[in-house]
Image: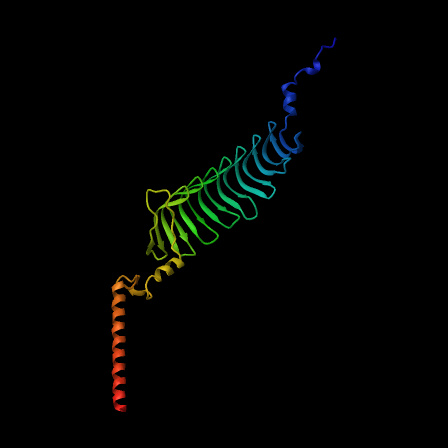
Length: 279
């Protein structure tokens, strides 16, 4: 039988092709780009439980579905670690991602991004709890700063935006009002007990800033009068500061002058009587 040309170039039959496909559990398989995989296969695709090690050093061990991470798994790369749910090769569902020893996020993910409700701990000690959208704080949330201050209110694209309140722990005061792109625009500043202290924020202008009265400012105000402010308690029980008026100061000065004049005249009369008695 004569040999036909290009017999060795014929495509393999479906049976041979099916037998050559990877299916079921396999030992470690090394790929040409340096990656390696050990686990289960289905129709020549990673499917089931398996471990993937990339050439870059990243490592994933968990569930696979038709060649992609899908289900529950653990991903590590350097000092970064993610433990949680996956879908179609991306973080999706509930999971925890550690960016470093101090910074980590614990909450909801959507298509590889922090989206939904979550809690973020930053390296400097700040903590944010609230809503996220595409890795940005967006919606309702509260952030507690390392110094003790905290903000609670609305966020938009990682900036304070909308209604919110900011508490100043060191000064014991709280600002409640509107925010636009991270800046306070219109609101009131009150003390911890709810007594209004200052209202330096106006409406309608973009160049107004939040003014916080300090202890030095209050001290300068107290020095405006010659006397120390007197504290009186009204019927409601709230303490108010009462400064002496200019008329009161003038009357006290006149009384003091009259008393000095009377003392001077009495001393002169006594000296005159003493001289007469000596003569």
